Amino acid sequence: MQVDWVVGARARCSVFILGLGTLLIVSGCHRAPSADVVATVNGKEIMRADLEKIYKANLDQSQQEPSTEQANIVRLKTLDGMIDDEILQQRAAKLNLAASDEDVNSKLTEIKAGFTQEEFEAQLKQRGLTLDDAKRQIRRGLTQTKLINKEIESKINITDAEIADYYNSNKAEFNFIEPQYHIAQIVVTGNPPQQGAGPQARHAPNEAEAKKEIQSIRNRVDSGEDFGTLAAQFSENANLAPNGGDMGFIPESKLKGDLEVFNAIDALKPNQVTQPLPVYDPSVPGHKLIGYAVYKLLNREVAGQRDLKDPRVQQSIRQELRGRKTQLLQTAYYEKLHNDAKVENYLAEQILKQGAQ
Image (cartoon, rainbow, N blue to C red; front, top):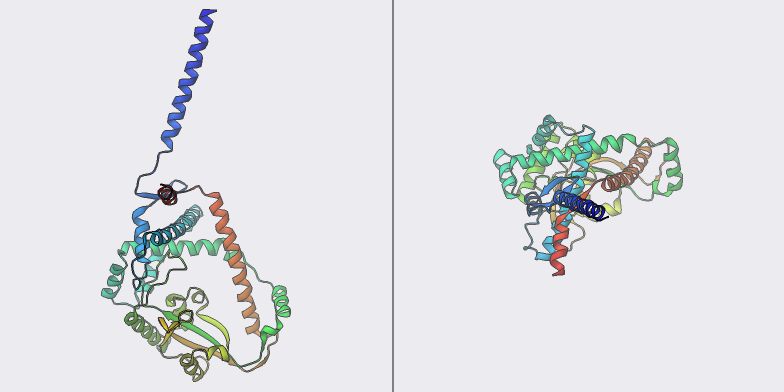
């Protein structure tokens, strides 16, 4: 009996030691990250230096330095964007949709077209970015676009029945009670596009560069280049650029809200383009300048009901329905990818820990 007890005790001790060893091994696999790591996505580290670079590049230089609390809020939002982007990049890599070097160099050439080499380098330096940083951001942005085109855009189909249903439910929308102006726009701020920036980020305009860039674009239109293609390449209105800057039909009374723009557009014939005009933020009193733009008058419509057979009506409805479906499916797609990913946000944990002390 004594022997059995000793054997049993040794066996229990061995199990305990084995369990402790396993625990130590598991604990060793979940080491705390270094201070240089602010998050991981499926084990891929997001570095503090990269977060700080994007954070500083997106700061509005016209404003005073934010408080510690405000700065950390912006950092958390920026990091959220970086996490979402990394999730998309990993998904794109899995589907072999990463942008090629040719894609990146082509896009870089488009971006640099409005600047001399010296001016472009100065803009990068102002944002604390190197050429490699810019190429990396461009690659990620193009990769994201390829992923969304493959996973979302290519799967959206708008039927004639859907167009007819929309028209019948919104017939008054196509009854113009006043003249309408069908306009396209190209707007610039003079700052290089910031890949990976959140939609809330808006830089103070570089007025001199904006004037020079918009005039350069206007000259290219005069030389015969397609307005819509230039808008897709250079316009900084992210909602309109993919559609060639098409603003749709705008009522005369609404257009008169900015008399300078109205007078310039009203003097045009269809397919003519305005000279560069200042663009102001309508939400800020006192005419806060946000950039410069040129406008193309696509068509001018008299008052009256538009029929469903009108190709322009069908195209307008098709764009509206496609935009709605894209927004819905894209939101759901992002959520699904996020749910499937293993994300550790160490910056958030650190801020919470500091706040509790």
